[in-house]
Amino acid sequence: MSMEAILIVMLVVFFASMLAGVHIFNTLLLACVIALLVAPGLPLTGQTVFRSMVATLDNIPFLAIPLFIFSGYIMARGGLAQRLFDLFGYFFAAKTAGLPMVVAATCFMYGSFIGSAPSTVAAVGVMAVPLLIKFGYDKYFSICLVTVASCVAIILPPSTPMIVYGMASGVSIGDMFISGIIPGIVVFAFLMVFCYLRFKIRGGENKEMLAAYQKDLRTQGFLKVFKGSIFAILSPLFVLGGIYGGIVTPTEAAVIAVIYALLVCMVIYRTIKLKELLSIIVQASITTAIGLPIVATASTFGRVLTFIGAPQRISEGLVGLAGGSDIGIILLIFAFLLIFGMIMDPNAVILICTPIFFPIAMTQLGMHPIHFGMLIIMCSAIGFVTPPVGMSLFVASAITDLPAMSIGRRALPFVGVLFIVSVIILFVPILSTVFVR
Image: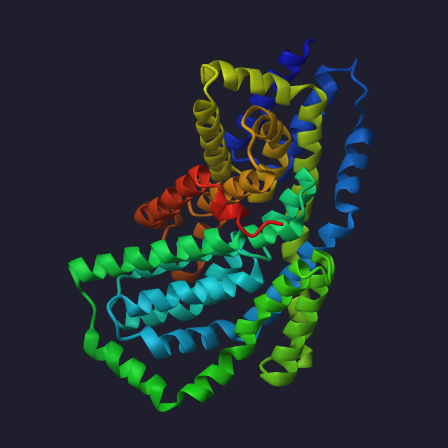
């Protein structure tokens, strides 16, 4: 069987399984097995596939993923989201769209040390959504705001997808971390403007209740509120400063993040007791155990595609569809990344699409590898809040008892903000490369 026929069979099996609702791990593994069956002449065996999966995870930088997940769970249990919320509410709660802006700011800061969009939805949503509803905000608006604002967690360091992209492409994980700062700020700024214009034009806020809430915070005094949140604010500085200063590697920074989280939550704030630590470890382990097998199979799937020459054939197809136009090619890649982001786990998207599109972006388009990586990250962020497999939507549904698909529909205006920023990132590469050494 020709390489083209093998590629077609693999892709048909892959998309058919996805449409049938087969779990992404089984879908990827099945596609690899099909390649072995239809191409017996190729030097691919079941043992080769298994070794590839193990080799993917047998990598020091990948240790950063479970460690950052663990530190995030510690901070979530330690109540740092509420402390950040109170700090921002002290200044902005009574202003136009002030409380929604406080929610967005809390997601921004909290996401910057947890690195997971669904976890940010859970931690901030459980606390913020009831409060927004209490002050008269629509329930769908409240959960849609939290869900989309939480996507900034994978745009800012220590983003797990950034670690995966660094491993898949060979670019510096530290450079990927630093590249997300400006895009993350742009997303945050656009969400702030969106909320402000919505309530400035349409109104609908209970100014008296909001003013009373802010007054209650201010009676505590700024020093008390600031003291309660200062260690949460400093957390990202330890991670980024150590990596970008050349003091530690991303994996070592993840260890520091765990130690810092334990000190802050168990010693300084004393919001976590020693007996609670086991349940936190179990939660983090479950999350890791769910995610890393997908990473292993996605990496193997990408290697099989590379082995049968898929990148070259897809590259030729894109050039043909775009008529040789560089703008046409990058727009097609952008469209493919958006589609894949909506139907697959972000880490799987990165490990499958990087070996296919990375060579095209580097040789045909002359893109900076960091710029291309940020484009994948932005498309993955959109995928978190769009059906059919947007993980953040299902977390949002679980904490509000609202249908995930209904949340997805109501979130479209917010998703439009992410899409606009993604287009800006696409055509203004300096936003993602300005801090890269």
